[in-house]
Image 1 (cartoon, rainbow, N blue to C red):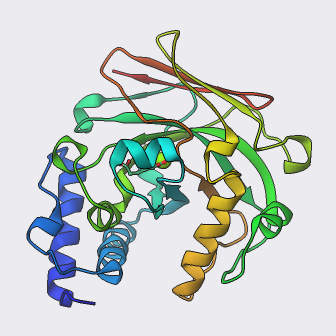
Image 2: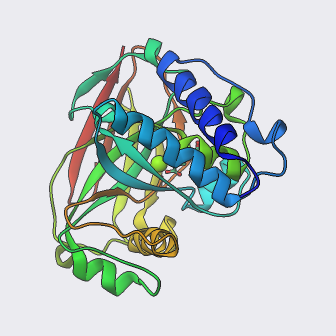
Length: 262
Ligand code: OOG
Ligand code: MG
């Protein structure tokens, strides 16, 4: 750690206030160029503690920047991990007020729900598949608190990987019923196809993103508990949305999930 505890808490408060008040800010590494990975995750943890302290719950975990499309779009080369809170959850078909967000984008994701805990190090695709209860489609709404979505990896980790809203829905499938690599994914905005992909875009196999998350948490003495929802990361580039947009995600064999922006 390069930052002292007071600075970690101050940056967490600043970034969470930007989230809650839909205000943008400059990336925090501009003022703290020496901060390290532990500092970045400590700030994210402090944001989580703030939410829990107000009675919120963690609704799920997420991996981000797990596809080449996303890494290229954001100019980084390593995945990152964060969480989604209960206040971020939107029902399938639900409405999202753009006035509550800064510059939202949507991402098509394959979501996992575990039936057994996963703990790294040494977690791999096989362990993830064995511990998965089911998979389902999910739209993640990201909303970086950084001006114009311009950040580096440490800044975005501190900002809880841009987590803002999410919806899951569609059909639930067990992993034995589908080949997660070849599943086709179609993201539509107002009936127009905006992006296309297949599950393999995420680290060759979306379960690899969950294994990476388990190994990341394992290095911190934590695990993925049984019954956890995990967003495995955007399969394609994120797509900017505005008020009036209807977003639908269709995943082969997994049905669809939709959101309306008002
Ligand atoms: C960071 C979050 C990325 C994903 O699925 O790749 C993410 C960002 O691009 O703002 O959630
Ligand atoms: Mg995402």
